[in-house]
Structure formats: structure tokens, C-alpha cells
Amino acid sequence: AQSVTQLDSQVPVFEEAPVELRCNYSSSVSVYLFWYVQYPNQGLQLLLKYLSGSTLVKGINGFEAEFNKSQTSFHLRKPSVHISDTAEYFCAVSSNTGNQFYFGTGTSLTVIP
Amino acid sequence: EAGVAQSPRYKIIEKRQSVAFWCNPISGHATLYWYQQILGQGPKLLIQFQNNGVVDDSQLPKDRFSAERLKGVDSTLKIQPAKLEDSAVYLCASTRGSYNEQFFGPGTRLTVL
Image (cartoon, rainbow over all chains, first blue to last red; front, side, top):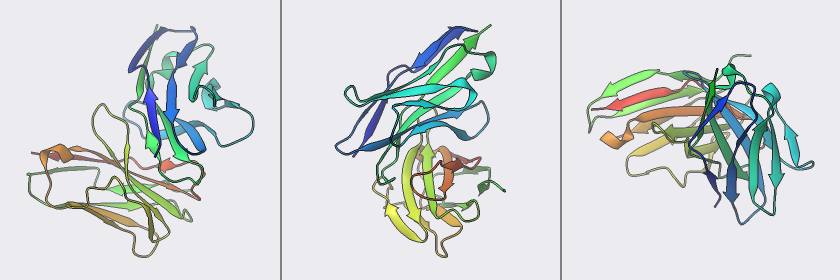
């Protein structure tokens, strides 16, 4: 089975500063990795995903993530955050058959004006 | 295209009562997921359907939870009898295939008193 650890439950950051949200996973098989965002009072939506190929993945709203197999990590980054990025961010992993989907506990990103 | 539909949006019941949630996925999406999201936690996969067959129900508390997707389209999740710890948001998601982006519905917020 897979598991996901999001190392920071809350991340405050000033507007226009860079941010990194950390995600580590464990699995005995090859995995697919995902980042989802949940804005206040809204449903979950996909930010980006890694299935195969280039380890640097670009997503919506200027976010990117890098798959590091040796460190079993998939950290999410943005070079300059905006107030509108305030939300809950979830890292998720599945087996490479698309089954056994697991979410992390989430990181609450608060952008401070 | 229409999104994932869920009903009801809110439900309040007494413990030991029964409750059912309904989900209609995006047209043509073969894979359907039910998640439980307890306040402050990430979504936990309860069951995954591929068409009308169960792919993964390893985290479904089968003594009280049941789910079906009889015609491979819409799905029902039932809790019988409910416990206080079942208070959560129940999310339904669907994908065209197992490897693709999951599209989430708005969720059903269940409160068990």
C-alpha cells in the first residue's frame, strides 16, 4: 500500500514571496503523484500530476512540482504567491495501475498581505 | 459538460439512524470514487468502482457502510447505523480512466448527533 506525508500542516507566507509545500510518499511499487487544491468553501481541483517522463511538472496558476524518486518526495513550489493562493493543498499518491489512491492530511497555505 | 452531482448537500441525523448519499458522475466517466473527509484531515478513499465493479474497498467499514453502482453510472453510499464518528464530508469523484484527473463533486456534509 501507499502512504503520503505532508510535513507542514500550516504555512504562512507573505504575498509575492516564494513558497514550498513538502510531500513525501512511501510505496513498494511505482506510483503516480498528484497535488490538489481546495479553496475555501469549494471542491477539490487538480493542480498538477506526475505519471511518467520529466520529473519537473508544471501545473495551473504558476505552480510546479518535482518528483524525486531517491528522496521519495514530490514538493510543490511557486516562485511568487498571491492572496488568491490561500487554500488547503493536498498531496496524493496512487499505484501506477491507478488504484489505491491516498491523500495526505493537507497543508493550509495562508498568504499574508 | 456538467460536473459531478451529489445529493443531499447537507444531512443531520441521530446516531443509530441510517442515511444514504447519491452521486451522478460526469457522463462517460467509467471510474467513480467515494471519499470520507473528516474535518482537518485529507480525503480517505472508501471505495472505487470501475463501471459497476468494485476495484478497491479496503478502507470501507463494511459492517456499517455499503455502496453500489448497479448500472455503472450513478452510485449510492449508505451508512447503517450511523455513529458519531461518521460526521464528515462525503465526496464523490469520477474519472474517464484510472490514470486521469479526478473531478470532485461538492460533497455531502453529514452531521451525526
